[in-house]
Length: 339
Image 1 (cartoon, rainbow, N blue to C red):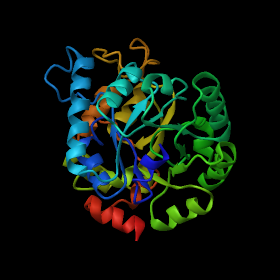
Image 2 (tube, rainbow, N blue to C red; image 1 turned 90 degrees about the horizontal axis):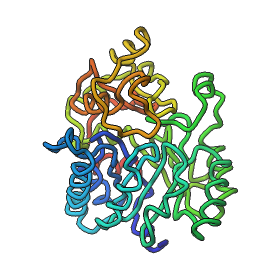
Image 3 (tube, rainbow, N blue to C red; image 1 turned 45 degrees about the vertical axis):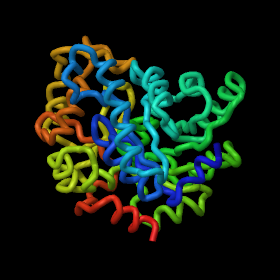
Image 4 (tube, rainbow, N blue to C red; image 1 turned 30 degrees about the vertical axis):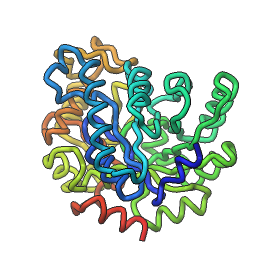
């Protein structure tokens, strides 16, 4: 399996972003440059005509299409992966379908992926997303005991990342969470020779060099890839990210049951003042989400964001979003990050 990971000619993983932000177009373009392009499995079939009536069927169909698209764009270069959230009800099914479609790697977070090897089987690179050394040690012990295997690589996600975060909300708000550099060092001590990729606040080649000196094999970067021509999001979504300032990134409570980082938008302000926006219907997409009590429907909010709907959208982003002020091609961004 290490030989497969050696196909990466640049030490960059493009972070998975759902719903619809990182699909076959972006993942394929990143892989074509020698990196690891990542397709988010989260409600990936949202554009399919039968999505509302049969979301699982639509999601499986779209996943296969996007993996095939990414492969065609990559032309045999780099690696294609999926990001599958543990918190989704379709987690195991989507992992199995991705493996059947020939995906190179499965990256899994938004919860500790204790059962990932069971869902994926053999022959695919498997990587958990962890936020600290304790989680890494627990997962390694569980995988070794139950499945007699270890991760092929580990993504260490720090407190400055976007989307769902594996930290207490208080740590994120008061800035007491451990630095990414220190977290990488601590996790590396636990995982030994397993390659570690660091995520969260990695913006430049200088940042990549710093985390590599701490023991990382490379970086996972997400928000910067939104502002690329090849990103699968609408131009409206990209324009919202490009217009955002550093102060617009805030910590939110997600229906997934974890804190997250997203842009302060009219939706976020309405939730803050009203307390709750009851969902009109439920797709049963999140294990921990109760439609009777959830503050809002995260899937509807993410789909609205995909279309550039600032009023109703949830725009996940990293802490460096204010520094993303120019749209480039994936080739230009990879060149900047690796030159």
